[in-house]
Structures are given as C-alpha cells and as structure tokens.
Length: 503
Image 1 (spheres, rainbow, N blue to C red):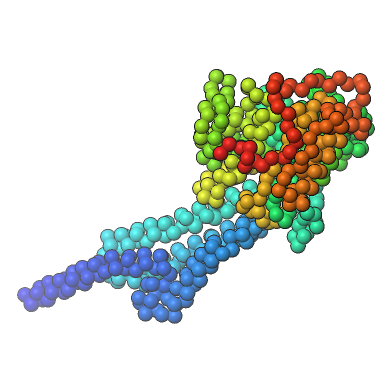
Image 2 (image 1 turned 90 degrees about the horizontal axis):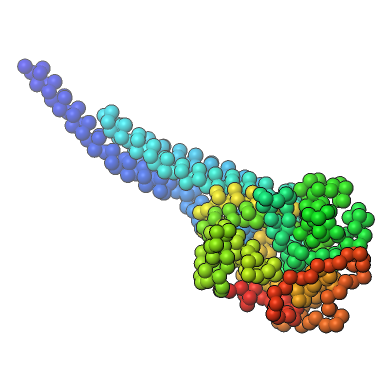
C-alpha cells in the first residue's frame, strides 16, 4: 500500500517537472528569436557574457558598417558594384553571413532549451527553429543569388580589356582626354530581315570633368560618305555604294556589310567587324574620335522596358501603334515594351528625323526612371534582358570611372542634341565639311562652358553639296530627301533635351 502511494507520488512529481519544462519552451523560443534579431541575447541570458558580448559587438559593427556605407559612401559602392571581383566576393560574403547567422540561431536555442521536454514539445521547438533558420536563409540566399546574376551579366556584356584589347590605366582612365566619345547604336535585327541594320546612330561626347554631353546624331539614310583608309576605302574609293539592290549604300548598312565581308576589315573577329568599321566611318564623317560603342537590339529593348515595369512618357500627339490600327493616344502614359518600341520607331505620318528625336526622349526617360529600387526589385528580368540586348567594347576596367561620370550626367549635367537631318543636311548629297564644322563647334562651345549654343546657320557654303574628300563621283545620282512639305529649317543649334522632350 505504501509502495503504491510512493509510486503515485513519483509519477506526480515527474508530471509536474514535465509540465514545468514544457512551459519553458515559449521563453526559449522567444530568446532564440531575439538572438536571431540581435546576436548574443541568448548567450547573455544564460550568463555567457564574453561570447554574448562578442556576438553583440560583431552584430553592431556589421549593422553600423552597412548603414554608413549606404548613407555616406554610396558613390564608392556604385563603383565597387561594377567590378566583378568585388561582386564575387560580396556573393561569397552573403553566403558566409547566412551560415554564421544560422549557427547563432541554432546555438542560441541549444543554450536556452529546457531539459526533459516531451516529444511533442521537442518536435514543436525543432520545427520553430527550422522555420526561423529558413527565414534567415531566404533573404541571404536571395541576395547571394542576385549578386551572382549581376556578376554574370556584367562579365557577359563587358569584357576584360575590352573587345579591342585596349588597356585602361585605372589611375587615369580617360588617358588625359577631356572628353570620352561613345557611339550609341540601335540595331534593328527583325525576324523578317537578315543581319543588323543600325537605324539609330548617335555619338555621345561627354565632358569627363563635368558630365556635360553633346549628342551628335546621323540619319540612317545618309549616303555618299567616305570609308576609312585601308581595304574599305580601296573597295569604295568614291564613297560607300553598298552591295547590290538590297543594299543601296546607306549608312545603316555599314555594320552588316563588314560582318558579311571579313576581308574589308582584316584581323577583326566576327561580331566585332561591324562595330569597328562603323566606328571608323562615323569618326570620319563627324571629324570626332570614337572611343567605344554600345549596341542595343531594338527588339530586345522592349524586354528591358517590360522588366522595368514600363516607362512613363508624355505623348503630345497620336502615334500609330502596331499593324492593327492601334494608336498611342496623347497624354501622360506608361508604355509597355512593345508600345515604347513603336513610339521610338513609328514613321507613320512622320519621318526618320522625327522618330530620331522621339528615340532620344525615350532614352532620357529610361535613364531618369531606372532608379535603384526599380533595378533591385526587377533585377532577374533586367539582367536577362540586358544580356540579350546589349553589346559593347567598353572594358570592365573602365566601368568605375563611367559610373562616376554617369552620376555627373544624371545630376544636373547639360545634355544637348544636334541632329544632322534635312533641311540642314541633304542625306542624298551631304556637305561633310559642314557636318564636321558644326560637330566641332557643338563640342567646343560646351567645353568652353558657353551658355549659348553654336549659332552657325546654313549659308551658301553650307548648302547641301558634296565635299571633295567625300564625294563618290559623278556616276552616282543621289535620291531626294523625303522631308515633309512645310518642314521649317533648323538653324543648326544644339538644343537641350530638357527643352525638346515633352514632360
């Protein structure tokens, strides 16, 4: 009788202890959660002051370093963000941080977990810690994955040393030059045509000190231009005449002609022949050095805009859209990729020269709206679209300097545009001397910091005629420019995009 009573008393004591231990689980999980939010809390609660203090100090240091870097050293972060080695290290750092964080969570639970938990309580505690570890791992893994994608896209688009093997001195990336000239190309590689036609060609001349930029645009249908010295000029001594009825000799054909004829630019690999010959050709036309090029496939361009979530524009007048009679209506609109592509490419009820202006306004709007938040939240799609859409010979080593320069361009630099289009220039019989003179004036005026634009106007010497150095000879009859009736003559002044683009 006494032994049975003793057994009951022991069972009651065991039950009481189990109840007491199980009731301590919420406190243990609370301390574990606190340690996940602020390292070291569980260690301090269990009397492990040295370890807890070190964890807390490390956590505070990492947090403070992140805040300071984001608020004080943003410019430096942007420059590091375009260096693949740093991006690889950052991706590895995220993974290490995740492993350390998970280790802290698991060890914290081990320290505060009550003993003698029954199986359901032990299972619930382990599941809660697993969920907490998962919550820590997801954002860290997401960040590591994003940095990997970014590094992959960066390395795919920008090559070490550039496609031309040019070496960059990081201490003097511009090699003492006051301006860097980048040729911006829009390639039309449609499914119903072979090869690439560069229907948009603009030389961006950027002041490396101030970011002030002059955009010098050439029409796709420019004719009778001289080729650069060498095999190209030997084949076309009197100017580019194309290759048969499908290529009548327009400027937008040079890129693909070089790709199809390796002998015209020997020693240059495939997919680089077109850019190299076009850079040299446009350099001769404008009388300006061409340092690098960026080619954007116009159909892939729509993917970039969709990845951004669209682009906001003010449309001043109806623009035909698509092949089914659609219209982009006037007003403030957020255009999807295909709509933006039509906005930049439509020639219905307008001409090549009007759409050249719209293309620049579109690029301006994208540059203004591609903020860090948009890039961060849409990064997967942006990186994939960029890899499909962009090609360039800008070397990786130049990217930090370009990031600094782009910051100047975006933060108040003056951007002027000068388009060599009718009636200033007759595309069938251009005055190349006038083109070179106006280009030089536009650049020199901005270099001098003048507030007024070049005031040169077409004069008798600037009338549409062919310079002796670029004339293809009398055997070629130029086509008439298709300029809308009543189009008023320009006075050849570069104009600010802020003034010309609807806003």
